[in-house]
Length: 602
Image (tube, rainbow, N blue to C red; front, side, top):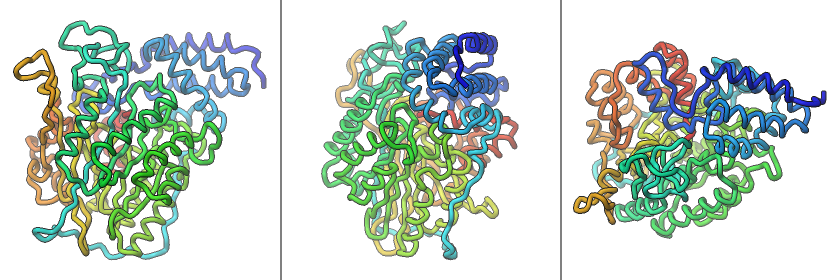
């Protein structure tokens, strides 16, 4: 059916959207009525950009997708649809006018193509973008990977290594978010989703100007801070190897181009090589901000200019100094790879964008995109057969993934618990972890997903990086994480020289924030230790408040108590996304925690 004009229909719908605008989210964290549950939810939502679609309320989402379903029956209406979406964004004050226009133009082609290829009803699309409270998504219905018919080996509980056993020191970098437009003295509080930039304007008062080394606000990092971090990390080496889990570009997602993304990928890759040296191997993973539009990672069945070949090919070019050809082959195919780090230890780098509900290409088909999880099973079975241990790295933590993907990943970790001895992620910008338990009883701890803090300050954080101490390279090594340290740059000190407070430190000091075993009184960091720590958090509020402080890299304004604490414990225990939902509802939060956690667009 060809629609001669959409003007009357869109005009009516715009009026409807405006009438409903009080229900619509803004670019800032929503305030929930129950005061006791706001703190943690705000902490989650602070790290979301707040647009374009993750702010939608259910009624508005359904109205928009009803328009799209009708309008997109004719390709001639694409321009009108894009214009209508842009106008709705502006009139509903989702963002500044220019941001609305830019983000619509940037997303329109890919998003419309994905929508046209999908078979979604409005209730299904909104179930993806808003959450299960807004409908059900049959395309995201349960699906299963196939496990080999090889019996699971008997599980032997890990034991600490003998005193003096070798350890591997592993540098972990994540969420660098370099902002090329960062400008010292610019406004740290602005109307755009990202501030401290040349176009952010002049601060209303001096202390809210962007600092030299970074800023406690919704700002990313200047290049000098990235280089200073790498220079410091090189000094506190040597490193046996490095894990680097992505998110290179800044959060100006409304104004990015492919050329800019590729340039930043090249610059940061070369800087890491320059400062850490040619003798240190880096194992990267793909972040959700590497692409433009942000979160847009079409599975390999999408070919041509809309595929991710432009990004994966450049990654293969820049990372060839670290990765062998076989790893580069699967990197070019789907953004994931595996290789042997040392005899007896293998790394698997997953493309976690294939599990992310923000990746709108999964509306077309979300069943094991790129067959990545089935490939993971094959890798793990081969490693089990050879007696190898495996570390898994990725950007988005599995507990924040789409339900079926998360469930299958959890199932794989259960089956190969004796082989998978480390899981390392980033994305949230905070210092966290998520637990994995045996599926039969959900009481025996068998795995930990370590979520490391970001390099960037976004939002209101100190810059930071992580060091892992792993059981070393010797016969029968467990290859488990034994301890970890977090280093930060205290911006309050770095931006104000002690002798001349109006000037920044020229050689700022990166300091040890904490060492995990010392901070929490643990002998090791095995899954059983983290399970014990969770129980300690419940019974000892002082220890939990220490965790809350460290979670924010030493810069937090409020404590976390009562409902905030309960919801935080839900998150830490939920290595599987349905566990987060279940804990959320059992504690009376009506889906607010789960939704807020998944709004993270870091």
